[in-house]
Image 1 (cartoon, helix red, strand yellow):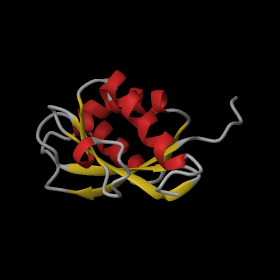
Image 2 (spheres, one colour):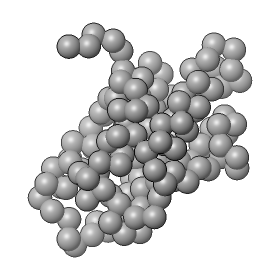
Image 3 (cartoon, helix red, strand yellow):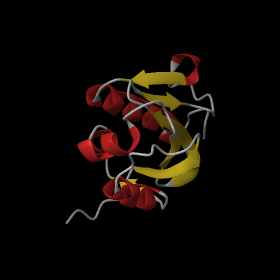
Length: 132
């Protein structure tokens, strides 16, 4: 077992509109889990989850209906908003760290999500960054 510290946290932050009527019991269970703070050891780990069939079934079947907060495990005040939809996963940087042009990035695949999560992490976690 890996004893290293996780890099990211994720938690459901808000419901934008009513949940889809077709939400399965399995998806409801995942939503209940994501309502508590979850941790991920790497950008690859988190991106893999975001593009997994289980998360897709929950949050990426239609227009956005809920949002999540991604945070640094070591500092929960450093956060990124994540809004999944069928078309994309939108990352919104409400702290304007400079990670994304216009403080928004539309991820369409897992590789892009890994790159953007690593970029954001390196900016907000670096000792000397303007976000520190």
